[in-house]
Length: 111
Length: 120
Image 1 (cartoon, each protein chain N blue to C red):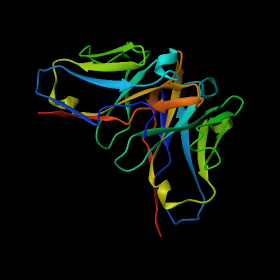
Image 2 (image 1 turned 60 degrees about the vertical axis):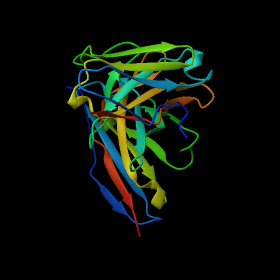
Image 3 (image 1 turned 120 degrees about the vertical axis):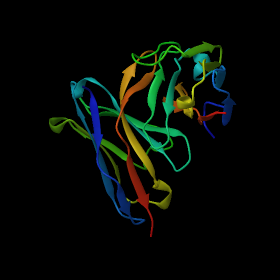
Image 4 (image 1 turned 60 degrees about the horizontal axis):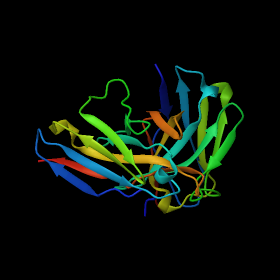
């Protein structure tokens, strides 16, 4: 059971907008710790998608955006493309565990 | 260019020991924390622990404390993850990653992963 909770799967048609939620508690996201998001294509290492809740690293399309509120965060993907089909995972810090924590991951299917 | 290059896949028997490596290049190795992350087959990412190469300051996830040892040899810009007695449940891909900071660590650079298979 992951400390951060994500839906196991989401799906959307090309061109649509999807959101992936990441729900935490008062010892992680709710304590003010930043949330970061990763994309993992099959058979590859994770790739940083969003850091510090809302920031995109250089090279990440602006179709990807992040937000955070209270004890949860969200990743939004607009203008869905076939190449976006991947696993997405959130990450933060938990003060009671004194370390980083990941969500369980969400598989995005582009219909 | 920042690179983290990990050692190759390993096949081991239960009870055997193992040490895998992660060599950094393209940046000042002693200036960034290095983390280890586990991914069991078909599962999500799990943070195992993190080390500051400059002073070998090491922190472990409670789930992995006492199960693995994280170390570093800063003379060759290399971090290690080791087991003294492997179990079948240690079968997984292990990633190293360089940590950056906001209010928390995040991982902008990752190694390619090392597949560890433990089977009798």
